[in-house]
Structure formats: structure tokens, C-alpha cells
Image (cartoon, rainbow, N blue to C red; front, side, top):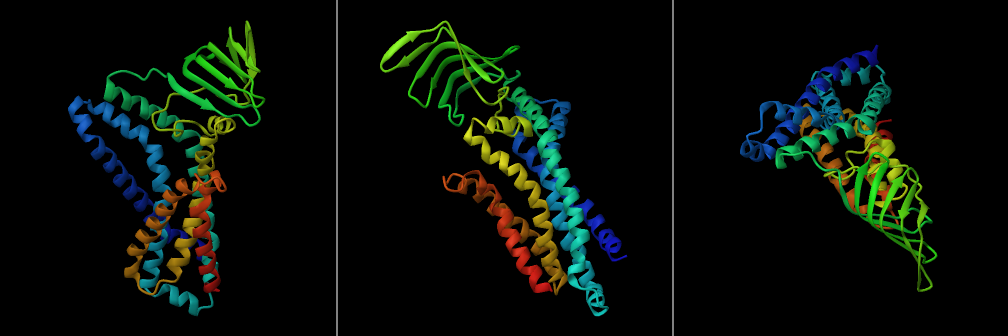
Length: 335
């Protein structure tokens, strides 16, 4: 009975919160692009497509933040009407409010993870393509420039230009340095499956150069390169995981996708603990801002922390660890 009542109190504010954040993020998007859209005379249909393609990104932000909003606003109403005091007086322990909210948060977390793993990357790639057309009047070529990779135990792979092709990708101005010091150079090559095939390469070892007809060098990631103007956001979870095997820079955004999904549960947990500690309902909106702002500050700092070699991509978990610690401390005090 208590679980159903609590979820009913949270459901309407959650819907309103999600819609509020969608409106805010969409308004921010349109305001940031308004100058370009007006200067280019962009048709309304293209503007609506930009908003539609950006919607999965918007939902990725609105779903967890809307939950924080719903929990604190819903509990504030219970505080204002003295229903929490009545529940406590009737022998209902504060911790009994945790299971239904955490179950709801876990369901939202799964939705956020599925969105970030498969839906949002495809939509982001279409958004970038459409935005490129708005700016330059043509579709992006898909050509990548000056790409370097460091597969563990295989040295460094570099290509000055990578072009998409039916057989995988074409490589130009290739240079591969093996851990032993052997250097391979070639004017062109092919990226096929898990190999870089160099055509007419030179092998340089011990200061001597030797010409080869063809060589296939192992490349552990089965990854088809994509041209992305906004980093790794246009890659699906599987593509990003494969790329992270050979590109250390991709490991942090990969870890962040898992951390962001877990962060939904952590945010809801802390919001619930804070809400159950409320004495005045008027504090609810201020606490919504503080909880969200604090998480955003830590989320931003996590990217800088990841640059520290000792931390690496695990820095993506900084916001979750800090907020989980605060939530655990608050939970112990509620007992």
C-alpha cells in the first residue's frame, strides 16, 4: 500500500519534471543555433529534424534529472501536509521508502543505458550530419584525418587519411611502429576486419629499409571508422567498446556510459534521503538545484580527473562515488 501511494505521489511530478527539462534543453539548443538557422534560411522541416535527432540526447539528461525533481517535490508535498510525520508516528520506518524509489530508479537507469548504448548514438550521428548540411550545404565526406591508435602490445598505428570504402576503409600515408622498433611505412593500405593491410610497404629495421609487396598487420578492433564532429557520441556501445581496445582516449567515454546509467540510481537515492530529511517543504526546489548542480560539477571534474594516469577512465565514476557516499551517510542517519 505504502509503495503504491509513494509511487503515485512521484509519478505526476516525474512526468512534469521530464517535460520541463526537455523544454529547457530544447530551448537552449534552438537559442544556440538560432543565428545560424536564420542566416542560412533553414526550412522549418530541417529545424524540426534537428530537434527530433537531438531528442535521445535530451531524454538522456531529462530522465534522471526529472526523477530528482519528482522525488523532492513529491516528498515536499508529504512534508507540507504532515503525512510523513503521521507515517513515522504510525511506526513506518523511513527506510521503508527506499525500495520502491530505488526500483523505479533502476528501471529508469536501464532505459537511460539502452538509450545511450544504441538509440542516442544513431540519432547523434544523424544530428551531426544534418547540422553539417545546415552549416556547409552538403553532407560530410566521412574522411578522417591524422588518426592514431595504440593497440596494447602492438605499438602505434597511424594514418594521415582514412576514407570509407566498401571493403572497410582506405588508408593513406600509413606508419606503424612495432614494440620491437620495426617501422612499416606505406603510401596506401586497407583497413579490413582485424588487419591493416599495407600495399607496397617499406619495412625499416636496424637502419635498413626493405620493400615488401604486401603485409597484413594485426589490428585487434573490428571497428569501422566514422567521421564524427562531436567525438565519440555518434558511436554505439559496441563500436565504442571495440575502439577503446586500440584507442585509449575512447576508454573514458565508454566508462562514462556505464557510470551515467548507474548515476540515475545514485541520484535518486540521495534525493530520497535528502527529501526524507526535509523539515520545510519550501526547501524542496532549492535542494533540486543543489543536488543537480553538485552532480554536474563532479561530472565535469571527472573528465579532468581521467587525465591523471593513475586514475584513467575510472575517473568517470567520481560523481557516483561521492553521491553514493553522501547517500549512504544519510541513510545511516535515518535509521
